[in-house]
Length: 59
Image (cartoon, rainbow, N blue to C red; front, side, top):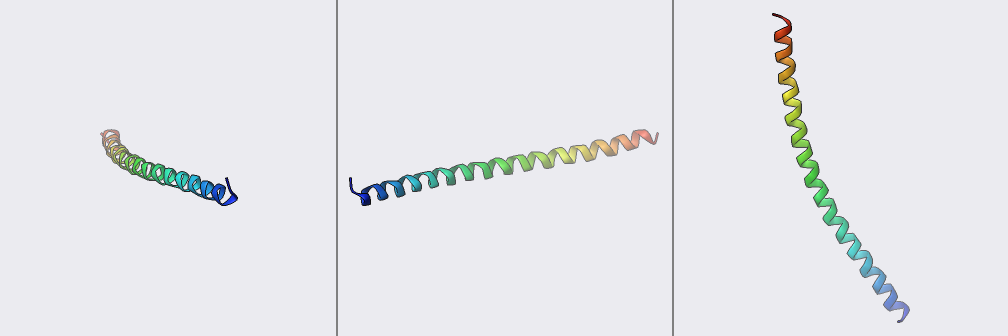
């Protein structure tokens, strides 16, 4: 195997790793969107509960 062959092999390996990282990055972006949506729902629920609690405390 020539040094050129080894270099090509290393480049191919790097490109495969890069592609795997890109795929993982997209998966993580989607997971983040899901978490942000859930976080928003929870924040809204907390706001509603806070309002209800304040109403109960003023009775």
